[in-house]
Figure 1 (tube, helix red, strand yellow):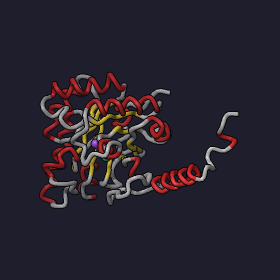
Figure 2 (cartoon, rainbow, N blue to C red):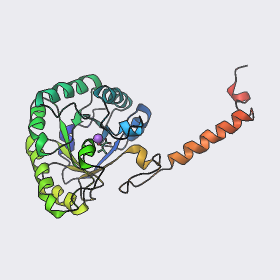
Figure 3 (cartoon, protein in one colour):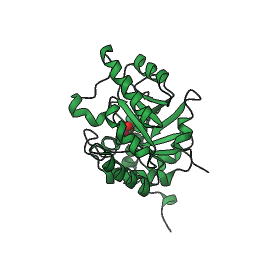
Length: 263
Ligand code: KIV
Ligand code: NA
């Protein structure tokens, strides 16, 4: 099966909504691969998989490790790997060096980075050199220490022009799609109408050209999911019930039984 490509995602503007989820590991990625157009190996894995307080501590090596697992576990969806904090902001050439490493070592089809107009020059530099780039604006978690928390963007209408300009700048720079995270609904809808590349919403708008959620959040593994998450599963409860049943059976010596031992 040939994988979905970044240009195919770009061509979905205004067409059937783009389906996406994050995944950080082979078994979940194989399930998501049946339904998602692209799978994001997000740097949210720092919090979800490694218990960090923010994404700021995530390294390039960690992204590459999980990126490899997801590419190996899938065959259909485009795999997009997040560039972590500190690996692309300094200069376009540093960004290219690190993005090329991600692509060579994971065999993913694109990278994502945070920032609007300030990252436009870098997005152009990468796309002109063979790296498809997904942009990410609005609430950008790598800037949590500047924002002073994870704050919904665009509540003050005076800031809308800045977000609209960010979306325009990354579009002109050659990004194939853009994540709109944590912004008021009418702003996300407005940006979606203004630009020619697909917008992928998370805490944004149903008007976006696609949607993404963190898999563990929508599966019900996050005990305190953000407001914008719709919880479709109850894995937390299911895992706990299974672990408790196992614990009880070990203690009462009712596991293993005849079926699970070698005679
Ligand atoms: O890291 C991540 O999971 C993301 C998505 C929420 C867009 O960047
Ligand atoms: Na991310």
